Length: 320
Image 1 (spheres, rainbow, N blue to C red):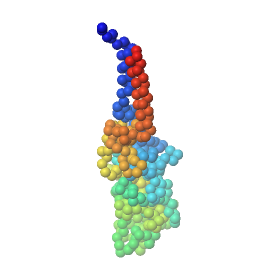
Image 2: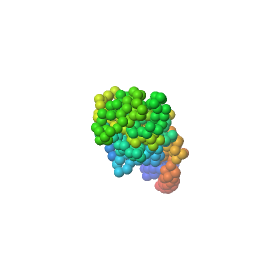
Image 3: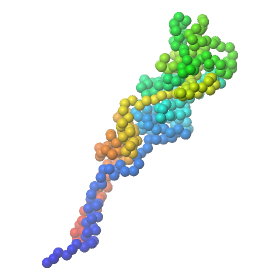
Image 4: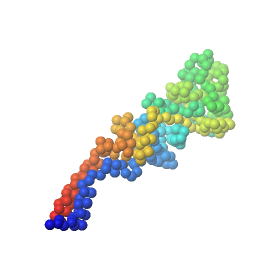
């Protein structure tokens, strides 16, 4: 007696049940675009190593930038500065201090209004004003640490990248102040220290106006190899270089697989943020252990439902 061939209904139900009870591959969780840590504040793009969202970016750059009414602010020990530009190819930021003296306005106050520029110890490995950035300290007291040992001791005042106080004295802002002492950056000041002392950040490591007993400051930078003539054409602001410590291979591998670079709750461990899970390597090498608890529960529930549905169809196929 020949066994009748299986009906088409039986074959269809059998194939469908096998499909339902087969668990999906893990890589399906990594399909689609990854969560983006890139954001915008006004017309400025905020991207790695910076970030505005918790857990994004490099751990050394956390709690650094804040977007307030579409204005990007940079916060360090000496205060908050408006970010005018982030130059990712050249790894630099341009900052603005509202009380910074310029060529048009020399701002002096017995109690310094300006921030100066002082980095927290934890930020120092990552940030430093550009070597082409000059700080001009104005109205400093004769007892300032800048002038300790004056007049016998050589002062730190000198030109930086062709910019200094001798040229700055020619600015219109000085005429608005009336009489003032004028010195020379050459080191010969007579019996009184100069009204303006130009220094590099590297020379004194911190522009702390209160500690230096100065009434104000100016800061200007040049973008090499460009050189401009005259202080009226200088770029006023603080040009800060940044660097990411250690290897960047982890982040490059993460972004190449559709993830975004971030860090763990300990504030140190780097993570690759992938769709639905965080990986300690990249989105192509994610594991169940890397997945968030909610995604794990969702996948487990889907598997249980699919398994029971598959078993039910198998029974129906057997009875067909």
